[in-house]
Length: 110
Length: 115
Image (cartoon, rainbow over all chains, first blue to last red; front, side):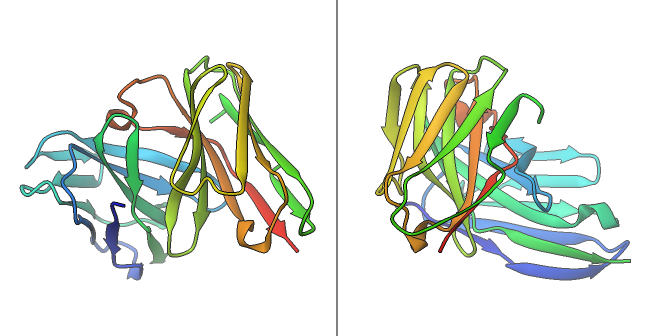
């Protein structure tokens, strides 16, 4: 089946730093989604991308839908302690078919 | 999200025993899903439902069954729990037919340990 490779697996950053993470696929997707999971909770949708090349922002978060439709990137600017969590990418090729990445665990050092 | 509740939140059970996890929603959403989350694997779909009594298998459905007799409830049953089913289980809902385009709402999860 489809696989999403998410990197890095984990990262420690200093508060105030910018963060970048990405997701790559062996298959083309029509939609890319980014979720954040706080400890002990379920994932929450951050950003949805629908078109190749699309760049979308949500506050300090910016995500891009890769031109090849096989990758996506998430950037967080000026990180703060509450950014801690696991970030998941998810891709969809069509109706009822969603593949999740393995997650990037983010730790922010105050 | 207050519109979706999973129970129990934590459970420890013995190998070979049956276990049922419940997902309850107050959003009247048509589509409901069960995922499991394991380190290194992300979220993997177990089963999903597109309406009352309408269910289908996901990518890791072996050893699991589901039932949906009411719009608001989606039950996941492990007929005979095994240690490989130790995981965190998430329920998700959406009212969108092309679900992925708009994302899911997830429950808070059930941590299941099979000893």
